[in-house]
Amino acid sequence: MIFNYTGFVYSLIGGLIPAGLLFLLAFFYKKGMGMGDVKLVAMVGVFAGYINGLMGIFLGALIGSIIFLPLLIVDKIDRKTRIPFGPLISLGTVIMILYGNKLINWYLGIFV
Image (cartoon, rainbow, N blue to C red; front, side, top):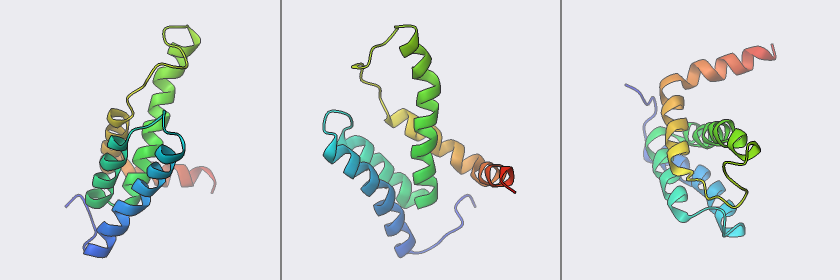
């Protein structure tokens, strides 16, 4: 079994926390993010849990930075280029589902 939780409450929390974070970003920064990203993260949180949802957002942003910052530096894109965040969130979530515990343990092991 991939997901080790049960219960309606955990799914509700998983949907509200990551989606709430992105909803606040989308609400206050209207030109930067659409509501499709919020819906995607809500679905991820409901099915995979809030930790995988939040870490999916983080890894998606990290992967997007690794891909798009060099393109920005060499002037292939500019600051007004719209970058789709949904595929990056999906990739980050898949990485978290498959390797999440190993990544978290590795990261925490750095500080011990």
